[in-house]
View 1 (cartoon, rainbow, N blue to C red):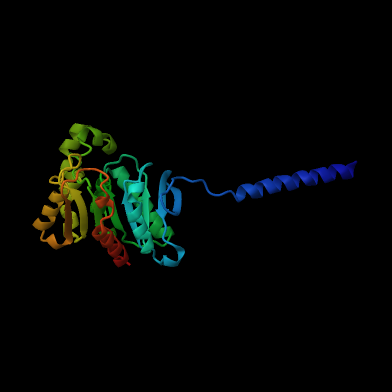
View 2: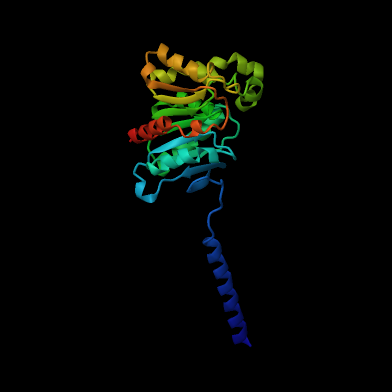
Length: 273
C-alpha cells in the first residue's frame, strides 16, 4: 500500500514538474503586433518594439532608427516597403508607445527610457536616426531638441513641428499637464518649432517629404518653416525638403516609397557608428 502511494506521489511530482517546464518554455507574450520580424517588449510598462535586420546583417553596435508615432496602429502596412529597405540595409527600427503625447515632457522621458534600454543594455548605436510621420514629428523633434547630441539625423513624412496646427492647444494641453491657456503662454518653451533653431545650431541633417495641399499639417507652418529656420541659421544645405505637388495628408504611395528619404536615413544611421 505504501509502495503504491509512493508511486502515485512520484507520478504527481513528475506531472507537476513537466507542467512547470512547459510553462517555462512558453513563448514570450506578444506585446505589440509588428509588420515585419522583430521583438516587442515593455519599457516602463509601455509597449515597445524593435524590427530587426536578418541575423547576418546585424552589427555591433547596431545602427537603428527611432520611429514615431508608435501607437497601436503604427507602424502600419503603408510603411512596410520603407521599413523593409531599412532592415535589408542592416538598420533596426524601434519605437515606444507613449500615447498621444504630442512632444510633451513625459513623452520625451519615455523615449529616453527606450533609448537607454537599447543603447545601454542591447548594444545599439548611441546616435540613431529619427523618423517622424505626421504627429510623430512632434515626438522626434522635441526629443532631438532635448538631446541633440544623441541624434544622427531626422527624417519626416508630412511631420508636425508646430503643435498649434495639429493637434491644437486644447487637445495638446492635457499631455503637457497644462490648461490650453497655460500652454499658449509657454509656447516658446514647449512648441518644437519655436525651439527648432537648436537643431540647426547642432547641425542635425533633416530630410522631409510633405504635400503642398496638406490641410491637416500645413506645409508652410511646419516643414517649410523648419527649412526657413535652417536657412536663417546658415544651415540650408542640411535641410532637404521634397514638396509633393497636389498631395495632402494621405496614403499616396510616393510618401512611403520615397527612395531619397530612405537612403538618407540609412546613410545617417550607419554614419553614427
